[in-house]
Image (cartoon, rainbow, N blue to C red):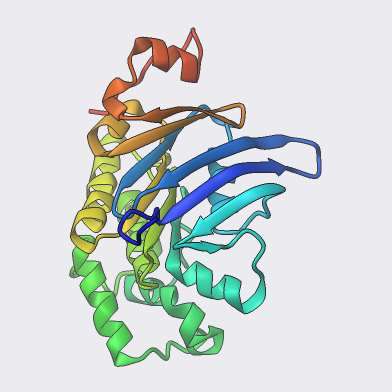
Length: 259
């Protein structure tokens, strides 16, 4: 396989069994192409969050393999794992910002893997990092709010700070775990538009968990669906018709649209 066609991420027969016996992922296999915006859908408990956490190794896979940029990352630990996480950005549903710190400081904490905790505590960051942070704050539409405390921002603004923070790592892929689940419809579109901007303008590959198919159809280049830990659909968002919707979400499910 040539470098040009090699996937940025390959998940092969991935299984995750938790200590309580829950089999969260059951033989999941798929590839992610460099530069695509791939969305994972499925009911709560289908394995979406577990999948992302196995990819960035917050959770240890039980069996199977994960290849990132051509390297097997399934069992790496220590320094190689920290290096890996600098290449895989992550944003969460609940933002995980430092509430009493400014927007600028929160974004700069994205450099922790190379600046260290002590420098972060005392706010000692290189000027080059500060310039980069300001450019990313501009990218996510928050220019002028650099010195605002994070807890004085709206939910959508806080999630945009989290996106900028993740981009400080220079990731080649960004994992987004239900990034708009805590937001209202209008704000959800705003956050998704900035993720699309990151994907298209910076060339960062996006792997995103979402609930709402209306968002999936608007922003995803491709979609996979999980059900009870198994991958049951892979293809274009436009091909998810009523039959597929009921297969993925259940016969009694009703699609909710975010306008």
